[in-house]
Image 1 (cartoon, rainbow, N blue to C red):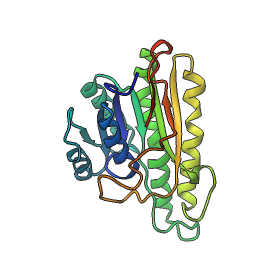
Image 2 (cartoon, rainbow, N blue to C red):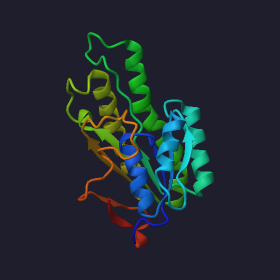
Image 3 (tube, rainbow, N blue to C red):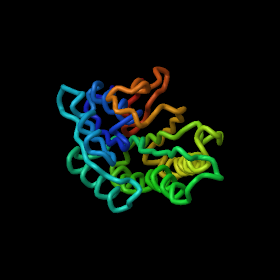
Image 4 (cartoon, rainbow, N blue to C red):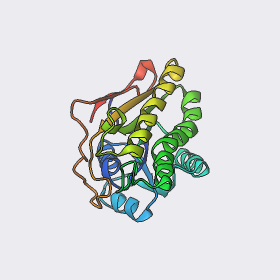
Length: 222
């Protein structure tokens, strides 16, 4: 069984990995909804896919808990349900060294990159739990495994937090089954305005599993 007909919500879907994931999953026959802070970027990605059904768009700030909750409620209404949640929303700043980092930027990066992932996952889990069905893919970073000057102190801290948050649903929800898959990228230039960024193609050897109950579990290679 492939991905055709699966419903997907992607945060950070206006640029970078999120945009590439949206186009790739639509091409596989999924029904995709994308969210991000900039509606113009979301519409660019949606316009890049000419097939049916069209990619749905909604502006949202995942770092704001009410906005994240409203996003999930909207996606569930528009898609019917969320089979797959791809969390790709993420930001960084230019001044990344501890000595030059603005405390406000520290708060911003932790809020979007860590709390934002928690907010959306927390909002999406109840329906997945009720259906005993779902897949959560958290797009983290190598900076969440090994802190570096490239990522910076705040970005690394946020991605470490994201990596630490993800296993929780696996432990608590594994019997339902709800699965979470981490993916750590390197620096990919998230601010690119292109709809098909360098990272638009997912690893060919990466298996995405558990899109359904054990008797009908989907296994697909993207």
